[in-house]
Amino acid sequence: MDRGSSWIDETLRHTSKELLIKPAWVVKPPKPKHRITRNSCMSCKKLKIRCNEGIPRCEYCAATGRICNYANSASSKQKKAVLQMQSAAFCTPSTLLNSNWQSVGISKFTYKLLHFFQNHCVDMLTFGINRELEKVLTIDVPGLWQKSSLVRQAMLSFSALNLWPFCNLEDNLYQDSPDDDALLTLLNSNTHGDLMKKLITGPSSLEMGPINSENYITIHKFDKIKDINYDNESMLKDRNLFCATTGYFMDSLQQYSTALSEASSFLTASDSEETGSVLSQDEILLKSAELMISGVLILAFLIFHPHKLLPLVNFGESEEEIGQTDVMAIAKGIIFIQKNAPNILRASPYKIFLAHDDVLPSISREYPLIEKLKSRLDEWVAANFLGISANSESLELLESFQKSICLIEVCYNECIEKCYPHRLFRCFISSSPYLEAPVRNKDRFALKLVFYCSSLCMICRLQLFDGCSVWSDYMNWYRDYNFKTYGGWFNSDDESLYDLVFRNDSEFHLTKFSNLKFLDLNDVESFFELNR
Image 1: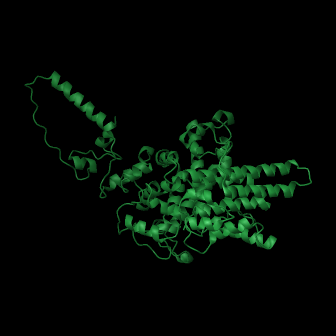
Image 2 (image 1 turned 90 degrees about the horizontal axis):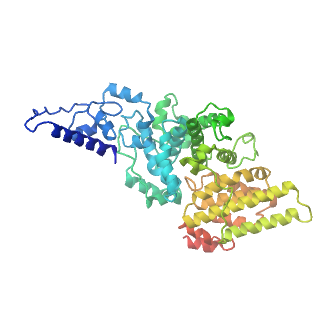
Image 3 (image 1 turned 120 degrees about the vertical axis):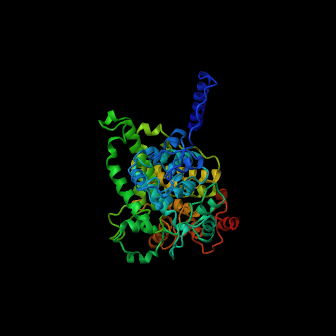
């Protein structure tokens, strides 16, 4: 029973007792009608009852559990009180999205980013398939909104980035937000991948609120960013989507670095007593959860960003690259955090973000693409172990390759069987600890495994814009490395996979994820015809 009905039942019981105690001939004089004050909340105005104009919620809304909305013309006293409100119970995205944006003390731009994250980005991350993750993102994660600035900035940066495909990157969009029809038109006209297009027929809601000509967001041409006036930073953050995205991301990255340096006291322990930490269990849960969630959002931001802020793998081949980090190093760090998370996090809903790759299920079905990869590993073993005794280092390297192939096979199978391509994204993250060292040493087979992961992510359109991603950059580097080192492609199957991804014929789009089971590098044309 909700709070509203319990309040009504209590009132009815109280009234019934009065009727039983007092004589029937005692008649109370009629009460004067309540006057509706000018600054009443919307609920009290609708019911035509007196409102005590309480902040953040009036007495009636607090008793009935309603969202208390005030009109835009709220008094300065009310606005000031709202801005000073610190209670987490009234600052979650769910509350904000059901409230007037001014009544909760946030900018309209922030409100729209929250709305977009809840109604679009959640579908993008779950693909309408992973219901457990959807529940955590819509119910549990919003609870960290007011408590964690790190989670808040990571959510805003990821939401702002994913707004880009809805705007024309060559022109300025001088409006608050397009309506639903305009959004769908932009979705169909832009080539930013099947990942976004699938949302048209999915369960997502693309509504973003009413259009208001008083505010607007813009994306400037990226080659003219230097011409923007940076004097008014608050104006810049609210008016320019590109700079707002960058600002939110830099804030989240800085806070993530600070939180990570402070995490050593609880990452490898089950409780605060084991490490001598003064943190309570609730604080440990909050800090470990914010690290987990923000880390995944930051990594997704770097991978989806069309400007490729960091390379997938940094080989230090130029002066600019020396000392620069890369996506693989960040992915390895996230896996370290996940594997050393405290027990209190493993018992919470946030456990869904943890790695569960220690024991992988066996796949009974054979896929041509995976079998080709296994045969190439056999060739690598024959070339590296023939006529010599294997040392511990070689055996450890072989075990890393076998583990990585198992990860690819499991994720590939889940993508086909459950139509959930994000497991391929997870595959790269989970295999990073095994592949980082041999990849940096440019081991031929390790480079090939990352090439396969990148190719599958490209085929499944795990990117914001077609042809602009860290996946495509790595694939092009891998091609150039083959030609520079071997004078051409070392394996013909690598060439077939590259041509499939980068073929000029725009008619190729993966129509169904289940079609991946037919991907055979010995007969790429049949797979292409199947997906025309």
